[in-house]
Amino acid sequence: MISVNDLRTGLTIKVEGEVYSVVEFLHVKPGKGAAFVRTKLKNVKTGAVREITFRGGEKVERALVETRQMQFLYSSGDEFYFMDINNYEQISLRDEDLGEAPKYLLENMTIGIQFFENQPIGVDLPTTVNLKIVETEPGFRGDTATSATKPAKLETGITIQVPLFIDEGEEVKVDTRTGEYLSRS
Image (cartoon, rainbow, N blue to C red; front, side, top):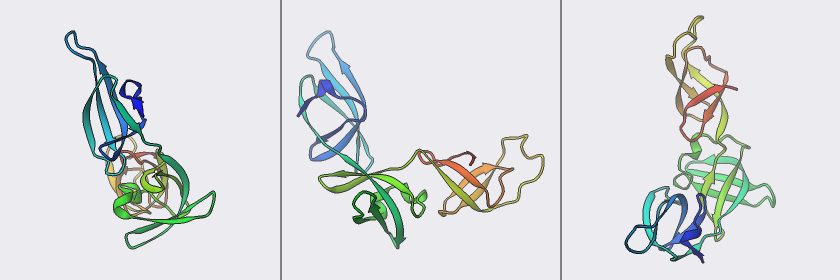
């Protein structure tokens, strides 16, 4: 158990049987009355953000979340298979357990999978991934002067907006948090 006065961004706690990650916290000491801590918590499993206010000095249970490095092997239907790179143990996760991650997964890619009480609860994708463009309209000389974009389909099946000068077959760097094109890779 830890005091809510010791909360920090990124800390994982258990509230009402659910595991949350602290996104924001604010210690408030009003002129009248007792101090309190206003928090913004993100549910690790569902991704839903919730605001909770705790009384000053109140205790919450700390959730020990372990992140294991796992290699993506393959997918079959809506099942995704991963292998622990330390002990070669394999697990499968459903599409809904992974959230946005399937959009950026390539075979043999290593990602972090979060476990709470030996149950997978979340995925830590790298901030950027390099993906190959499999389909886009051809670019033309001189198209670099404006910031116009065109749709491009990537090897994982998602479509993003890229600058006009990017051609089919090129690798691009994509931000996994926003799904936006960053640069050529």
